[in-house]
Amino acid sequence: MPELAEVEYYRKQWAEGLPHRIRAVKIIPRRVFRGTDTELLTQTLPGLRLTEALAHGKQMTFGFQKKAWLGVHLGMAGRLFQVDLPYAPEKHDYLVLETTRRALVFRDTRLFGRITFNPGAAPSGWDTLPPDLLSGAFDRAALDAFLQRRKNAPVKAILLMQERFPGIGNWMADEILWRAAIHPARPGASLTPRERGRLFKEIKAVCAGALETIGVDWRDPPEDWLFLHRWKDGGTCPRTKKPLVRETIGGRTTCFSPARQVL
DNA sequence: GGAGATGTTTCAAG
DNA sequence: GCTTGAAACATCTC
Image 1: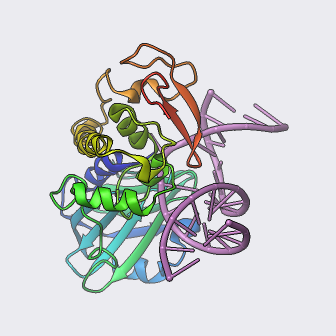
Image 2 (image 1 turned 120 degrees about the horizontal axis):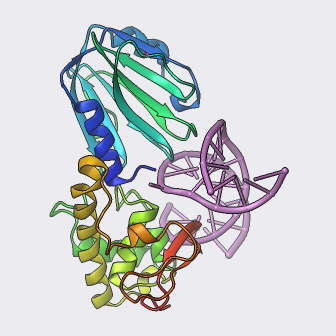
């Protein structure tokens, strides 16, 4: 589920009430810990305080007094939440951090998520992240250069590339292209300067709008977004009032408005 | 029962 | 060496 704004929402679930002094760590060793020293994790965290909760795109890092860092990626179906103790972990709860009164839970029904652990000074990879899409460092030049480089890939697939568009996932890519009136199968290098301008503007707008709604309290974006109409076959385009179409483009289910987005 | 799902990684072909 | 697309991953829901 989680894209930029959903990740921000989940980050806040664990951030609520910071700092948290960790008293116990419960782990169910499953695929989400691939490549991670779970033994070291369970030995290190008890006694430390969770002091920082950071998100960047779809990545999260939780810092423990700058001595240890937990990396969390939610994959397709991961969730983070807090509950009161006592808490009996459910089937797909693979990590539970307990404080005196609360439990911080990582749940992932599909096991596509990932948890990493870095004892030491800094979370690995956190220093080489691509620019945040809402920052000035993500600009037209960066967008244009990337589209030019991926010249034959469908623009839908390009928007899903995290190395340039951190946080954009399937629904956000569809929303951006729909608003920019660009067909999702258009090759990256084929976009005109005018289209690139619209694409740039809508990337910023969708990121900001999603964070203001979903990112705050999981509330839906406004009715006039594609968001509320894209999930099932038979939807109607909120702008043209004509039928929406769903097909696989760039390897993913893609919803668009043929009346508005022409190949 | 079969298909599809808001993601990433890996592999191989061009 | 880079780009691109497909398959694999695991489980749940429609």
